[in-house]
Amino acid sequence: MKVIVTVVEKITSEAHLNIPDGLDESVIKQHIVDRYNTGEMSTDMNIFQVDFESISARIVQEQADTNSIPSEKEVIK
Image (cartoon, rainbow, N blue to C red):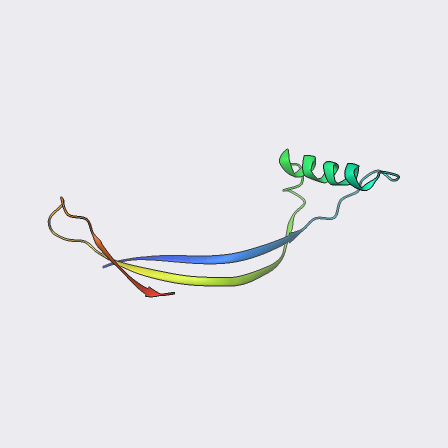
């Protein structure tokens, strides 16, 4: 029997950044987005909190006939 389990979690990460003083809000936002998009900030990110969202499982019943589509049954939602 094959079971496909899907776990959904919401992960909150936190980074402490040093940015130049005197920047306005839009420049600060752009600086943060640029650091994130270049991957520079990902090394600074620490997992702060993980919230469990959901778990589901499906039983996949494989049939002897290779031309048939396997049937699935959801057992947890």
